[in-house]
Length: 88
Image (cartoon, rainbow, N blue to C red; front, side):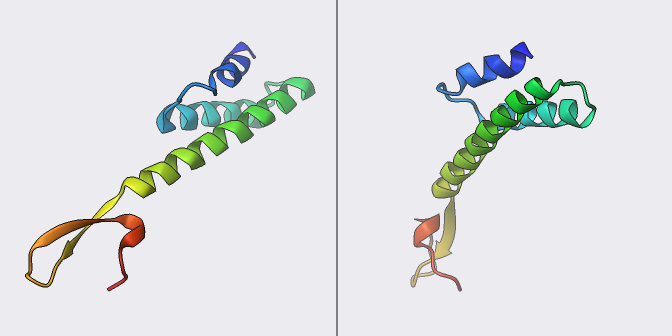
């Protein structure tokens, strides 16, 4: 159970998406296999919620950075922010 508590204390630091997802998958596997007591299952659930939020935040940040290639009126390719793009 120390890995779950260790992760919780590190959530204030930036944990990348892949690491958060891996830890979330580990928690789910342990819970599905019945490896945890009720108390540890509740702790793992709390940790899973935090990791899920961390993953969602990372995905939102990545989405904001996405740039789309768009042809301007001169036929040149330019980039525009994902949120500013217009559907074709």
